[in-house]
Image (tube, rainbow over all chains, first blue to last red; front, top):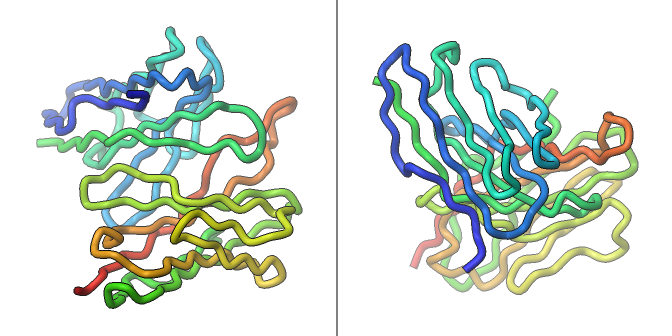
Length: 114
Length: 120
């Protein structure tokens, strides 16, 4: 089955620690994205990548870092510089071609800072 | 200013009835795309339907249709014959052309969502 997987489903972090969220897709999509969702809010873009070894900041990139070494993988690191990291994180991917390009999402990771 | 406005924080509908979820948007660009996603309590965002700004007809996908009124800048989602499984958050999102040279903008701007509850 093709799809997007995110792990772990739940993640707990102590203040001052960096944590890495995994996102893998087997849809052969070129573009991948990370969004953050806070309660009662829509999604906000953290980072996106259109091709391997290239990525761009979104609206709220401060305190986050990413890498794109493989087409299938786009891990997100939440660093200790992120002031309020408790949120629901969603990864998405798309073909990355054309204006009608549709993003498909993974199941999400819920991060809680203790 | 918000680019996507969903004015209904919550909506209730009886099973088998139709329901309309409102979405208005703000853009000065003639080219844009509008998307609707469903988010059940499990959290995953599920793509439902897409409408392009130049599309002549309203988009339809099974029980979902989009009431696209360009002059009013509205793109309301209509769900016909509601089912209990339709209970979820629904998000409207917009894509506008990119500002970076040579590429399209991949960013989606989301509204705050509408929580739909289907009653038996």
